[in-house]
Image (tube, rainbow, N blue to C red; front, side):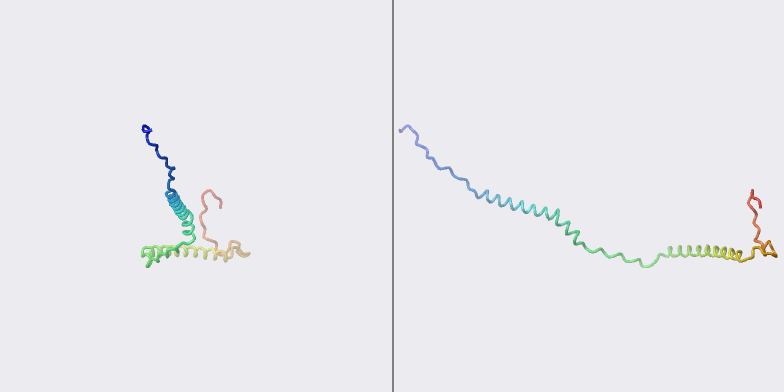
Length: 127
């Protein structure tokens, strides 16, 4: 028996420690939870709050100090032109009203008191 090597001792199998798995699971779960909450806030909560709670509109810009002199002059010229055109139209209306009041024809004077000014007939028409 001296020839035989000494018998090896057989040790019971050592169990691997479980704490790294527990710590990894807890840490991984925490990171997953944090990532889910961050994405949920970024994708859902932030847009809802931004729409629901809006800042008031900025105040309107103040009106300019005064009108532009060139614009005022152009408007006054337009007003004068329009007054002149209105005066011409009023004169035409007054002339037409006078013609309506005048007697066109009576039993004594079938041609009328004052015949209107004769205007030449256009060429090709009978008078």
